Amino acid sequence: MRVKSTYICLFLLLFSFLVKAQKSTDTISFQLLFNKAPLALGKQYSISDKDSLTIDFLKFYISDITFYNKGKYAGKSIEKYHLIDAQISNSYTTHCTLKNKEFDSITFSIGLDSKTQEKGIQGGVLDPTSQMYWTWQNGFINFKLEGKSSLCSTRKNRFQFHIGGFQKPYQTRQEVTLSHSGSSSLMIGVDLATFFNAIDISQTNTVSSPNKNAVMVSKVLPRLFSSHEN
Amino acid sequence: MKIKTILVGLGILCTAVYCGVKKNILQTPEYFPVPHYNFNNNPTSEAKIKLGNNLFYDPLLSANNTISCASCHSPYASFAHTDHDLSHGIYDSIGTRNAPPLFNLAWQDRFMWDGAIDNLDAQALAPISHATEMGSSINEVVAKLKAHPKYPGLFKGIYKDTLITGERVVKVLAQFQLSLLSSDSKYDRVQKGTASFTTKEISGYNIFTSNCASCHAEPLFSTFRFANNGLELDPILNDIGRQKITLNSRDSLHFKIPSLRNLKYTFPYMHDGRFNTLREVLKHYTQKIKNSPTLSPELKNGISLTKNQQTDLIAFLATLNDRDFIISQKHQINKSFFTNTEGN
Figure (cartoon, each protein chain N blue to C red):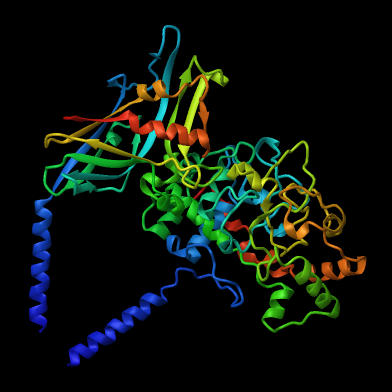
């Protein structure tokens, strides 16, 4: 009886290894851009004949990356949460497990789900030293963008977008779906110029709590993302 | 057959041991409700509480090493700030609200007078980084702790590595705060059957149950919900309370309902510390309720109490003062930790 169950256990163990071996690990890279060229922090970008802007800080969460092939689940990211920090180029890449190399679409969220938000302080990329947990209220910031522009009549011409909020009516997590042709690894472009084309920073330049403006800005974010073959 | 019996026995034993693993070592009285705090995310231990105690009393948490949590949350004031209507912070700055007392926090689901924070672990981030409180940041605190002669060793004793993270710092701080249990007042001894109320206290208790208990419910003496208790708006502070967080006008002038335990130590009262004595508080409730659209419905007609009834009520409230909690050595500063910090 005991010998038999040991064999069954061994078989199951081997089988699980075989299943695992069929899966492949792939990387998915996010490329931060400004007008299709690689984004440089602190660089002055002109946005009209007389106005310009610089981006000094950019961090955002990408979560639940999931791959599909012909509508069927085809894999997901190894880590549930990924924090992209414009200052750390290592953070642009994350690893995924794919059933096989084939997929034709990918979905992910910009920001964190409410269950994660409600759980509060956690470790890893969710550690409060990531500077993404609000200090004066609860919740993680989903998308944090700071810089300066001659268009902003604020102190030191600063703009500051701390986009977050997970409780009704100010929910700011946004879903992104991108289609992908071919079977090569994936590069996702994140073009910040799109942000400034959509948001008039002479009018809206400081958003730092869950409110109507945060929701409005969050709805623009999916448009920043586009897929390219590598 | 024998092996099977042994296996079943082992199974039962393992389950029993697993269920017996206590996530919460804190002793709470039977008549307290189930705590709100999720101890699974931060299981308590003596070592963590002790480390949290050191952090709580350490001015290292502030930008210029002058302000500790205890600066505004003194053990002798039931971890409030006696005699200070508004909290005092770094560089002699003055805040906008009265520092609330800290006890029985595991039963509370929202913190700060406006409930801005719904997670005790996260709460410490607010004073650490507030410009008029400690003026620092969790990143700065973590860096200082890493360079400290004693802290890395203490973290290693708990987490088996010297890695100090923001998560560990705030969770250890929460552990000390969770250990602040106030459940040894005369009221508690009456509940436990080891003391009895005087006639005056019984009269006060009856006045309490029919006039105050809907918001200040036993045994914690608060529902920890939010309410507008009819205070006149201070035109300088202009504090609209919870509305600032929810952006909902129905929450205008709503503040967190405080516990009535330990009132002897926590004056001045109200979110802006405007009343110095319980007599003034009762004068407010009996004579000065300001009507407004968000006023608590229980207070629409004010509370009517004779002078004698007020005296009896105050006598009952005095039974909620927990002297043992105030003088408990385990909640005080660990002086030996703060001496010889320079050396090893």
